[in-house]
Length: 142
Image 1 (spheres, rainbow, N blue to C red):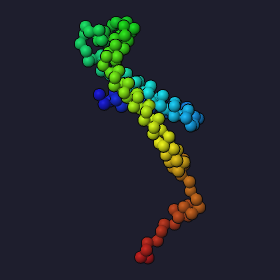
Image 2 (image 1 turned 90 degrees about the vertical axis):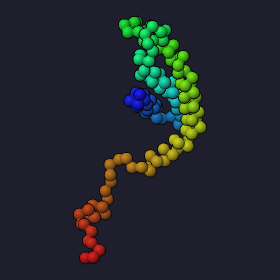
Image 3 (image 1 turned 45 degrees about the horizontal axis):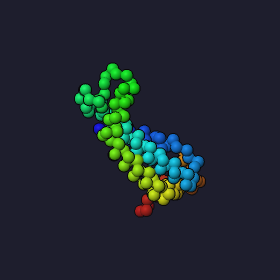
Image 4 (image 1 turned 45 degrees about the vertical axis):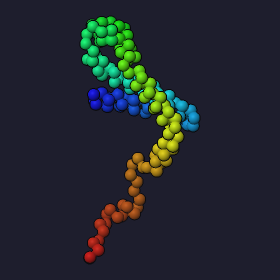
């Protein structure tokens, strides 16, 4: 179960990283909230795919049928998702979208402020650090 959760979460994170970076203001929050809602449903579907073929026995209207046409199995999967997880997926999508809409602006400003302060480039050296590295410090008792 956990490996499938990690894989689904990584795909959702990758999708978030692929969102356009040039948006600012209300449009940015709307797009993030929309992505949160869509990713909430997508996460549920990915998790359903991880166990759907093995959950039900053969012969039900929701079961995976080996060798059946893809359209038939997709129909079974849609019915399975509708009957078993639509409520959970809908709540997840709503909570994620509301969370992004409410907390998005302060979190984004904190992340941007941290990115400006943090140094993720090559380390810089000055003349002082270069001289200090060539001459080891004397011990205090000498």
